[in-house]
Each structure stands twice: as C-alpha cells, then as structure tokens.
Image 1 (tube, rainbow, N blue to C red):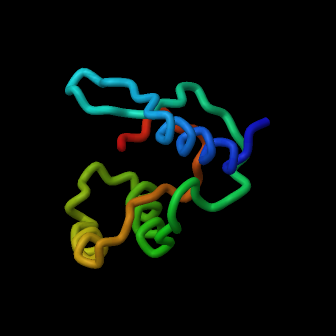
Image 2 (cartoon, one colour; image 1 turned 90 degrees about the horizontal axis):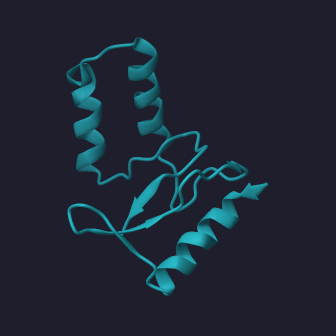
Length: 97
C-alpha cells in the first residue's frame, strides 16, 4: 500500500520530468487517478492549517448549504494567506501546477 511519501514523490518526479496532462482549458496538470494510500502524514505538501480545517468541519457538520454563515472566518484566513487543505486525505484526483 502506498504512503504519503510515495504520493509526494510521484508528483515531484512527474513535475521534474514534465509529464503533464493538458486539460480542456489548456492548463498543464499532473494526475494520479484512482490513488489509494495510507495517510501516515498530515499533508502531502505544506503544513495543514488546523484553525481553518476546524472552521471547515464546523460548516460541514452544521450541514449548512450557505457558506456565507462562515464568511468572517473564511475572510480572516484569506487575509492571512493561509493554504486551504483538508484534514483527512484519502485520494488525489488532480493537482494543478
């Protein structure tokens, strides 16, 4: 079974080798379709922003279809330039470079 380091290495190597897929908009992407791996690290790239993740989970658990409920928190994080990352990573479909 793959681990996070295997997934990270795949994308790093594909980028080095410039093995891009061109999507319908003309953007270059690197894909790993149907990936399944053990999430043995908190992130594939970068550091998770747990404060933002907690706000995302609150919104999800609230079952609200209105993001405006949480716009103050979203604006706060965007002003700080924080990355948006998911707490649990189970599969990657496409990453855009």
